[in-house]
Image (cartoon, rainbow, N blue to C red; front, side):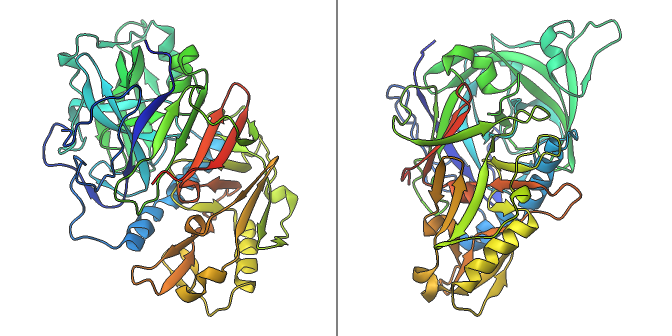
Length: 443
């Protein structure tokens, strides 16, 4: 097994994606491997195995539609923090309706190519298997009977107790089965299994994942999910010393035709000089990557925010997380309102709304729009305008690309989302409990 930093392919999963009509995923532009690097392509690029949406939609409408699923995801993340059992709403089984990135992986021997959603707020990996009832009819499914290294996990194995919603016979024999809710409207059942997982040039034998055999609802990613959280079933936990609890990613802009975003696994090849902030841990939900956001400034003005609205509280789940699956950053209502109001105060109106965005203005003023800075403990992140503003398809409007979190019973969580993370290298070092952020143009 190669012990090296691995650059894994990322693929942006965007709005209203119709998967290829072929049942098996093909690789239209296979690239030769060079070390541990893989080429990266956009889901709508000419090298993508998926077809673009028809009719074509404008970029701003794409982002708006992606962001329309954010409230469900943020509600889900809040429920995780409040210790309520559920799963991550990442993508639709038939049509992708939220902004996610996927990694090109192979499962089995010989390897079967899958494009799995990369999710920092989930632990387990799972893929649809052949004969799955309710899975996408157009996306490729994993065929366990063609893999010489596949095997189901028995109920007697301790790993079976690591999955929630498990169901085993009373005598403790038989295959380990589990059922989980997912995305608010879906439930899937799967067999806990083991097989070889290949990422780039790294081969990980006997990787535990769910082989999905039935799905109801429309929120399940069509080719499965790779969990990058910190739980016992996550990639970091299962690979142990191979990646030493370290990974980073750079998410490319939604607008880039040729995407060159990257996922780097392991300490080698990571930035040597990068500012960091402490990584906090909620014992009730250790998978989430909490950081200590201590303030927000707009231009030169520190936004007046009550400290308790940003404070980390493991009991209530309050605080701030960095998440790869939410599209636009969501602050709890008082924090967002204060930030938005200061932004408006420094910029000439009038203001209008566009979908989830309630602070849109004439684009000619975007050059004088104030810079938004997120103040973390030990780290100040000045958002480039491309990470804080979004423009209408006509170019006449620019909008503040943030919103308030859903106003539900546990609306205590602030989420730093992927639009605000684009063209940044985000480093997660779980061993040293730190998160690093540095500017990196990966378009």
